[in-house]
Image (cartoon, rainbow, N blue to C red; front, side):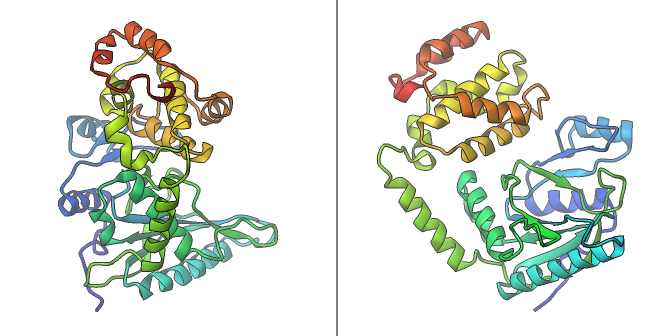
Length: 337
């Protein structure tokens, strides 16, 4: 049964933010991002948020919701399609194919255009809210996007389109806000939608595959199952570096990033997984600290051998005036930490 949730009736960016705040009941981050202006990430409704509104009148980025999938449809090659309206029509055609797949699982989906060549689908899978582990949830989101975008994910030389699935599926990532101006100054508006009354479930095929992957990862020799053991074996210094409290410290951020890379390598995470975690850390903890650029992260991952030890970390903690947290460490020099 199709029904109106109230989401599609929203016409302004501020009513959209208010809708999400009332629906989810937790603080989420917003930002103003244009070609000429860029603010820090702030929580909606706080004094920092009000300061941005007072100065600039609006925000146009919001944090992804815990149950939200984003399908970013790109139209790539101008040599195939020369007219702008043809590009947007092709993006919409692809969007309808993907949305029809979502419809089979009765997942609420909404297709938006921001005035450019491509389009965006926002889809909400209610069952994702029941998964508390953020790393698990991010992995399932990525698998769901791949599942529903099958046939459109790979960038091919002879095709002018693809669906992006390279961006972080983390809840910390920000996206263009509905009913607001995009970074290029174009209005992001709803084109079509499909809504269902019953709460939506994670596709069984995807969920079973995810469980198989987790079991396989847990059984690999010499690889710690980070997702399960992080709260039992993680040193207090790593816990502190990953906390939002760390953003108050301005010094030593690149050295701390190098420590985190070493730690993740010792846990057996792949370079891609480490890169994704560092990007999330940069966004959520460092508030997009500009001096740690993406190319530096990739270079650091490549050169890091996972051998950073406690002595090096304690030197940094001493410089920062917080070496006392080492006294709480019960990890006993756990694998090069």
